Image (cartoon, rainbow, N blue to C red; front, side, top):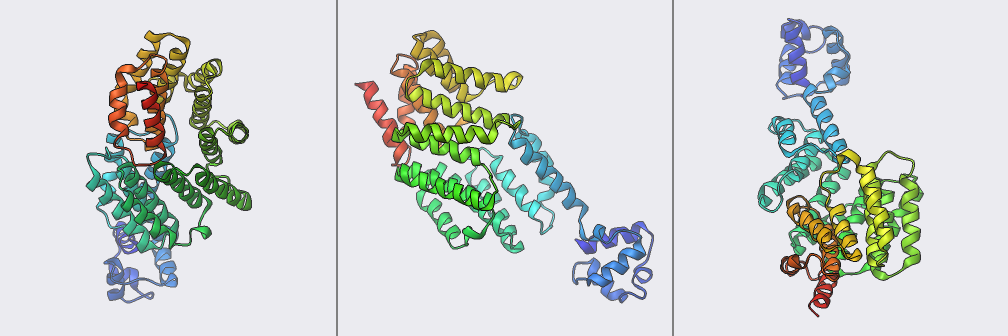
Length: 396
């Protein structure tokens, strides 16, 4: 890439290879550098940059890579908001950069984004191909943190597809990579993956909490609080099924402390949803209504369809005895299934559980057979057992 940049600038300055190389390196050496067959020393690069009248940094940075970095950062930032880039816009922006040989971490990230951008159930081979290309780039560049992040992403998909052996193989590969000495971001995401594995397969809620407590200890040691609110939120949800109210309330309080002075509306909505689930489990209908109102206020004009709100509304109206409104909310949730079925099995399980609780009050009854069919395809783990129990109660 440096050679291509030198060649482009040389032609822009209307210099021959002999004119540029004179007194610095041989013409044949310059030709090899421009064609990517040799590397220039730092001293030579400084002299070449001086003759081209450009900063040496402009030779070291590929303009295409800079463009790609800007795009990737924009897309990643939007993914954290309520207005992510559309699939079409993402593909249109990134595809031109995928066929260029860059040896760039940003190209690896672009492949990951393209994989995540796909409808994962009907495009499994293509999705895995994108991830494998990203993994190959990160391995070649020695980018261990990004490599582990890509392996984590790949493992998530295997769990989502209920391919336990494949997911375990990814996790075993990561266990050999000294994750303890990697960034807080990587360690936290790895801990969250282990939590998902515990909840999806083993059903070990205490084990899941131990992984999360370990992530928090590392945050305190490094004073880097990446996704601290999500970690506390997940502790609260695990404690919810353990019926540990003290730990639930402590975790929610900590999560709120991390986000109360930020403008991160998405994090605040996620927390309000988690608190709504707490209210649902303990049948606290007025508290549930408060959290629904909080979510709607946070989203304001951005609120068109949000699965979490529709599920919460369905349960709220069911508990209130408003069957018509409850059925309408659950039907809205079901009609938007294409949007949320691509989420993790945990998200799906939460929405199914909400409908089943509503069904115990007489709302969403028509959806129960579809939920039963979906639950039968879940891995043999905590959520399958838990939801099967709710289904049996409804059947009497």
